[in-house]
Structures are given as C-alpha cells and as structure tokens.
Length: 247
Ligand SMILES: C[S@@+](CC[C@H](N)C(=O)[O-])C[C@H]1O[C@@H](n2cnc3c(N)ncnc32)[C@H](O)[C@@H]1O
Image 1 (cartoon, rainbow, N blue to C red):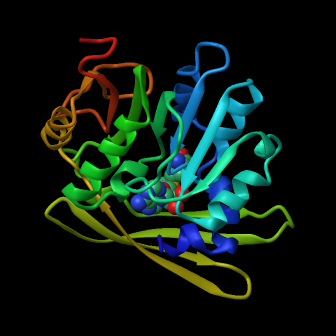
Image 2 (image 1 turned 90 degrees about the horizontal axis):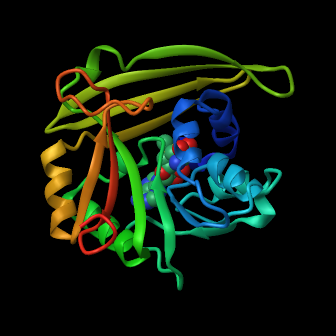
C-alpha cells in the first residue's frame, strides 16, 4: 500500500488540480527530443507526462503501485496508447529496454531506505538501453524545508464544489520527514500521513556509481542552472550507464 492520497479515489481526483502541469513537466517533456522514443515513467502517478508523451507518438510505459493513480492515467485522452503497469519501482520487470526513464514529482523521495534506492536504480539500469538516459529529481536536504512545508489552499472541483487542502509538517529525523495532508470536503475530512526521505547528493552519487551509473549533469533548477548545495532547491540528476554514451 502507498499513502492514502495516492490510493483514495476522491483524493486522486484532487491530485491533478493541486499538482497539475508545471515547469518541471515542461523540462521532462523536452527530454523526448527524438521521434518514437521508448519512455518509461516510474511512479507515473496520474500519468500527466505519460499522456503528453503518448500524444507525441512515443512508446510509453507508466509504472505505479497505486491502482487509483493508474486508473486516472488510463482515463486521460491518450491513456489508451500507454502501457500501464501496476508495480513498485523496486520490483517492476518489463521485457523491454528504454531510451528514457524518468521518475518525477519527487517520487524518488518515497524511497525511504538505501535498499529501496539500490533496488530502484538496479531496476532502472536493467531496463535502460546502452545509450539511454535516466532522469529524476530529489529535494536538496541542505535547504530548510521545515519552515516552508506547510500550506493551505482551496481547490475548486469539476462539479463546482470545493475542498480545503492543507499540509502539515510533523517531524524531520535523520533526513526523513513526516507530514500530514488534510482534505476538508463539504461532507467529510480525509487525512493522509506520509514520509519522505531527503537524500544527500553524496548518497545518491555513491548509489549511482555502485550500479555502474553516473550523473553526467546535476541541475539545481528547471531552467538548467547547475546544482548549488547552498541555494538550489532541486537536485535534478541526468544519469547514464558508465560504459554507455557518456563514458
Ligand atoms: C508525488 S507522486 C508523483 C507522481 C508523478 N510522477 C508526477 O510527477 O505527478 C508519487 C507517486 O509515487 C508513487 N509511489 C509510491 N511508492 C512508490 C514506489 N515504491 N515505487 C514507485 N512509485 C511509488 C505513488 O503512488 C505516486 O503516484
């Protein structure tokens, strides 16, 4: 089971309204820069990117452990052109190699243990073409997230109703954050508790190299700026096989 806000149909319907198209999605879409690429989206969620890639004629697979998220992706305009796979990042097994493998929306941070990261990177590598590219991002742990984590927003639902959504920081221990999401609908309050790991640059780099992978670039922002440990919010990894195109 994943978190309630990924499993509950009512909360999944809110996901595209609070986490819709944004500059990070433009960045990932631009990576599909050749015709008919094979693209794997790990932790694809509601399939916003999968649908856009499929609309452009790419051969797209979306993997996610949440049935509700996958159903949301399937229901989108180009959902019937995407292969949807119900699996965890650590475990999916597809009989196919990909030009591009992505893990977006900070989904990498749902990987809480070193073993989770090990299994995920190993799996990605095994599904990557020799000259293929893996791209994912994780929030920079050197930024003080605890002070900026809470928010409140009012979302208008397609039926005209509203939901008051809020996020509440609980604790940060050993770079693992605990927080709660609350969704006040007109008839009920739904809650979801969640954990995210804030991996360091060094932890990710050493996991990559243990798997014969390397980051040819680490960006700090969606505009292409290089990562700066003191100021960048994002760590965006562009990863290749060590004996592939880059080395
Ligand atoms: C923040 S959402 C990101 C979704 C999507 N990538 C996006 O950019 O909107 C995190 C997603 O990770 C999925 N997830 C949770 N645990 C996972 C795991 N172990 N492996 C793969 N995906 C996982 C959740 O079901 C959810 O769809």
